[in-house]
Image (cartoon, rainbow, N blue to C red):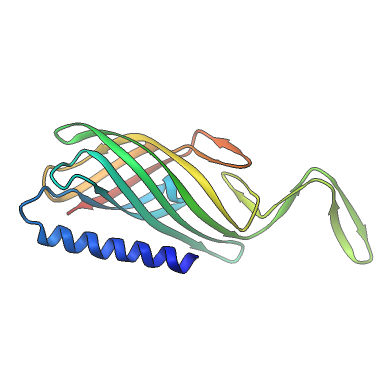
Amino acid sequence: MKKTLLQFLVATLVTTTAQAQTNTGKVSNTNFFVELGGIGGPYSFTVDKRLNPNRIDGIGLRGGFSGLYNDEERIFSIPLQVNWLMGKNNSFFEAGAGLTYFHYDGYGYTEGGNYICDSNGCRSVGGKEYAGHFVLPISKKNSFFGTLNFGYRRVPQGQGFTWKVALTPLFNENGFWPLFGGFAIGYKF
């Protein structure tokens, strides 16, 4: 599944880049972002494209990937989101909703229950087991987070550098975390 999603994202990026380079009579409305926090997890690389090729505002799609590997944990995520830009000139309010595939391989833990230790070692009895924790408890190695996005985006009229800051609440089957956010810098082409 990860391979298919990654192939889809690469194909989308290549197609979007080719369209941006050949559609010289249309408005530049494709953005590439590097984001700290936000809908992808600890960081992400995303492409954002407006669906109307003649506008820099309105409805758009955003997708990307993220990965974090160290001695203790491995995280891979694929954020996908529908968003809407509303505003004038270079300043826009951005609102969005989406889903992020989240693979987490790290330390698991049990919440509640009791620990029993014997000659075979220690183990948990009772309680709820989790695969790990990233902002919210993660029930399985492969899971999904729902994402929301409320923020400000600064967009040039033509090609150029862009940035944004947003409140990006996350939710899954274990809860809702309203105070997650992100900051991104990017290039509009």
